Image (cartoon, rainbow, N blue to C red; front, side, top):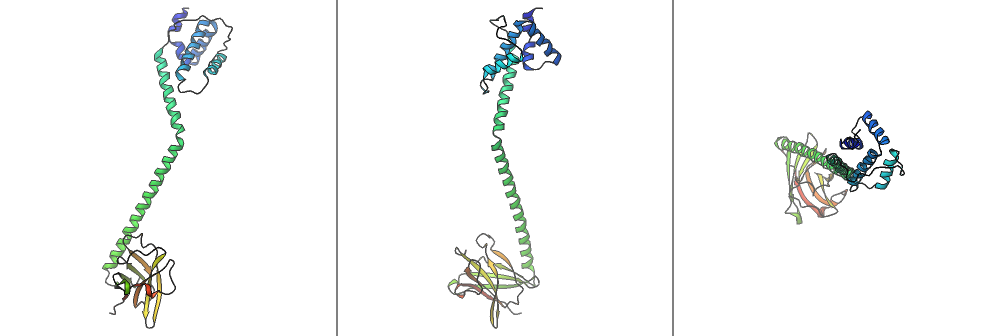
Length: 266
């Protein structure tokens, strides 16, 4: 057999690359055992691959060569024929180099796993916020449709509330749905309450004067429309709005009476 022709055939590069069949691998292995020149050529090919991977690998190349020698059952006292200028199939090496670069890129991507998880969590959070915004928009639409229906209902009692005393520049309006036992408070004419204070809405009977709390408006500053719905099962004769400490009061603070309006008798 022409050993040089066998070496130049490229089969050894394919052997190192692991692309041969099991039968072909066994034939090359047998040739390495029989011909030291072929064994030396395989070791030099392996060495060239190690040099190509040195830039991206953190392994000790000496230990890799020792492992290769051990796998090939190569002993240091074996006599080999040194080939000064071996002819390698550098096209095959180029493919290996591309694979190495790709592998390094994949390794880098894996190392960014925590960052990717963070990005995914950010997207999920943004999606949840969007869903909340959509749901809020639907609620606002439902509220708007309800308010429109109330405004167009002839059975709804409208009660203008005028500013009182030092607050004569303020105003509000009550839309009272007696059948549904609820009121809508249009508080657009009231300023934002100071920190630690809330507006409280009162239902009043006049003889004798008896105030009944309908509740506090806790989210006044956050509501753009300034329209608030409260329950009112009372036989109201007037409505008033006072400024009270957070949490509300048992009785209205008359010095902080902002608006007041009497229900018209029809």
